[in-house]
Length: 62
Image (cartoon, rainbow, N blue to C red; front, side, top):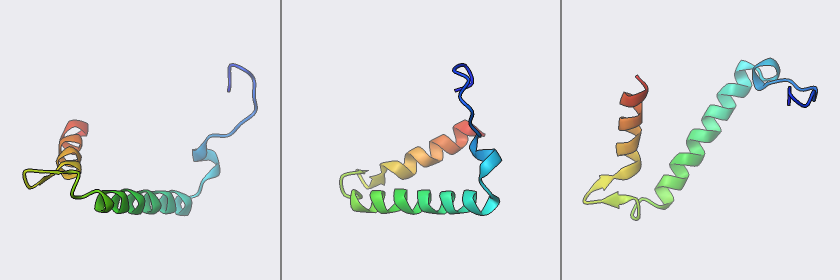
């Protein structure tokens, strides 16, 4: 947007701490509900794949 000289503000300039908390909460609920809906499909040999990925991603990011 800057290259095209379009006036804008980024989220950090507009959103409040409460807004970020709501975004986090809604995102987590959405993901959990999605995973719960597909739990049987996303489980392989008693391993829930999203949980495995979550742990691997956590270690990768730290």
